[in-house]
Length: 273
Image (cartoon, rainbow, N blue to C red; front, side, top):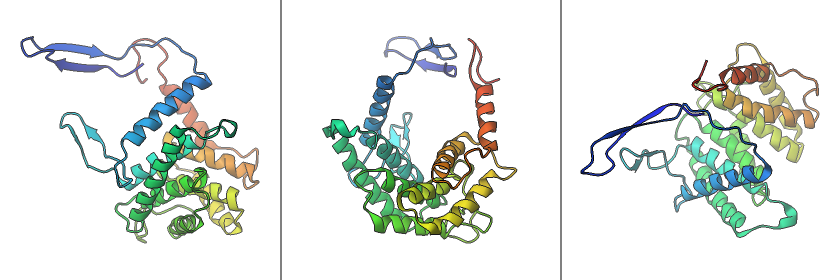
């Protein structure tokens, strides 16, 4: 289902204005198999690549009413998120099938994107550069052609760790008085550290990871669904590496799943309860 959307259009110059109403209609239930999911991923990857500019940056949001990208370039956090999405897709290539030209093109786009984002992160442009550093570090780890970029990995993890507060939270920038990361991005540093630990087994990451995990598990944290998507991955990696008990509770995850199910459209004509 989708939200109800009302369009007012003039089909042709000599025709009267008409009103179109779309949405708020239940769609038939359809199963998703591996082929359908792969097709969706390929289309999303192709779209992201089409938004990359020559210098490796990503175009900003497109406003149809103005026929412009405003701003012309995406923010550092959106740049880093787009490149990480491409890295995740490129990492799904099956070794026995080899690299297709499509994947090679994606890898080139990732390389350009990482180069652009990393250069901008040396001078913080907004209050989300900590999250952008975490996403860039994750890209360097997950992309098969960038895993040996040790110097850049070191620069990213250094910038992340120097922004951790004593309670385990992370500031949004290097400013000592900067606010903590926005809710949606709060688990990104933990996930980036968990991925790096799985790759390197660097013992110096254990304490920062424990502090961050304890802080995120603490009372009063928001069950933001985007944050929990990152947190669930981090907790999975921590369990796999023995840094989190296999039977440890995830109170935020339980809360988020309950909230998500309450908001799901289950009958025709219904939106959010």
